[in-house]
Length: 286
Image (tube, rainbow, N blue to C red):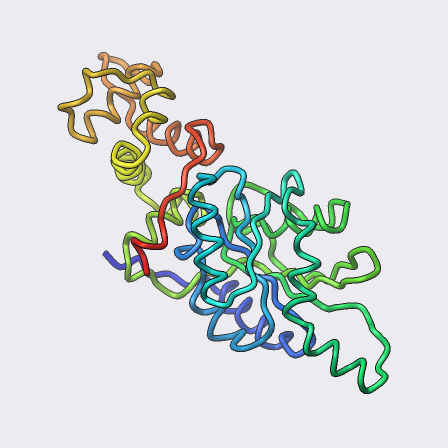
């Protein structure tokens, strides 16, 4: 399955990033710690090139802690300066300063030798929709500098924001790539809300998510939805219906409201009520 789409505002964002890249010292790329590879936009790699970059594995608080460590080690082994962070609480963001110092050390040394006085560092924040860029910037700036939301497409224009007198941040709207040829990547992004629900088959999406959780996090799935041995021989769609039954998603005639059930499952996954879950691991993708 190829999911193809490229709204006009995303083409505009691509141009915005390209046109402003020369103004910044370092690029801060945010990805979702639950799907660190799938939430890295290859278009951003093409645009940013060799510009100094720090990778922030955001939303680490709702990802599997063991998997967080694996991903952190993986990216560091690739020579990519990487930190784990939770922009909602601010955990991990104290490591951002040292990460920036590391990637700009050579630049700073050259400026020092030339007698150039240290100035504020200009940073560009990039990432796909819904990886938490606005929350990240708000936490750094200590105020509601940008709009935030749990759905993609909240940030819609370029914004320069001063942070602690030391940094200037350029926020950019989220940008997806023109099409998803890998359906697994599209599914993972859609699970987290990075693709608008309106263009997805929500029931199918929840069906796939139930199957993933059943295979990888069965204890969390069973505990959250009070599932017992009765489901062992069920197909994934039957399991989805069982969850609907247990949660009272019933319509007239005693049938299960599968759309309501699907939305319930996705909402509880996205809010981490099911548990701290990671959707991909390095050895399965690299």
